Image 1 (cartoon, rainbow, N blue to C red):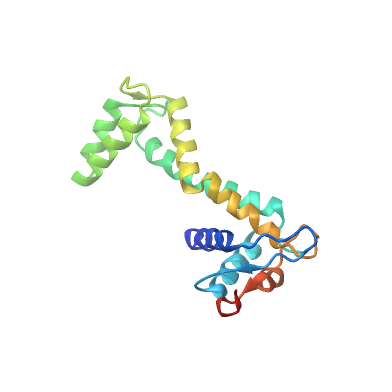
Image 2: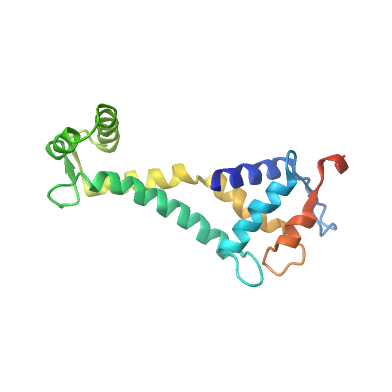
Length: 179
C-alpha cells in the first residue's frame, strides 16, 4: 500500500503545475487513476491525521513509523542469530544459525553478514548493526520519498496547515480536463 501511495505522490509531483504567487490554488494533474491517488492519500489522512486533517507532524510520524518498521525487521534478522545475547554477531553464531536454514536462506544469511560486517573482521558489532538498521530504514522510505510526502501539504488550500480529503480531491484535475 505504501509503495502504491508513494508512486501516486511521485507521479502527482511530476505532473504538478507550479502556481503563481497570486494563485492560492495549485492545480494538480494526476495521470492514470486520480481516484486511486485520492483514495491512497485519504488512507494516509485517516491513518496519520487528526479530526482536522493531516498535518506536517502526521506526515513526519508516517515517515518515522515506516522507517522504524524497516529498521526493526533488519535488526530482528541479525539479532535472531545473536546466540549469546551480547548485541553482536560473530561468524560462529552465523554458522550455527545457517545449519538450521534452507540452502537458499544460508546464502542470504551469508550475504547479509558480509554486507553488515563493515570492517571485515568477521564480527558484526553493535555499531555495525545500528548502521544496518539505518540503511534499511532509508531504503524503505528514502529522502526523496519523504520529500514527496511532505509536498502533499502544498495541497492545503485553506492554509490551516491540515490537509483534508476534500482538499486533495479538489486539487485533482481529471486527465481529460488537463491541458
